[in-house]
Length: 60
Image (cartoon, rainbow, N blue to C red; front, side, top):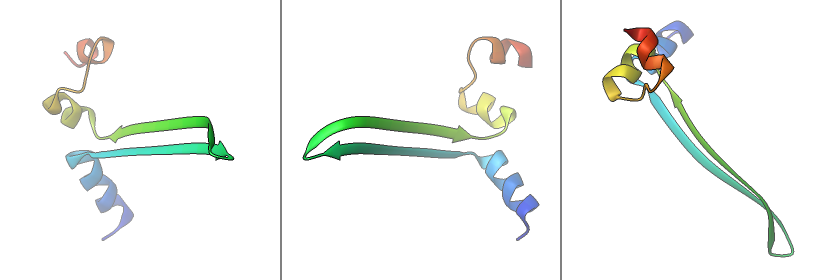
């Protein structure tokens, strides 16, 4: 599978990633970092109901 085919599948189907990182010293949490990422095409996002506000208006 080529990189172009892989990217085409990811954009068509969509991918959601979620992660958390906590930096602590001596059992004291200092920094919390949360990440939520959705990667998909605008057509896929529209079908899934992910477009809001200006993005949805621009597609019409």
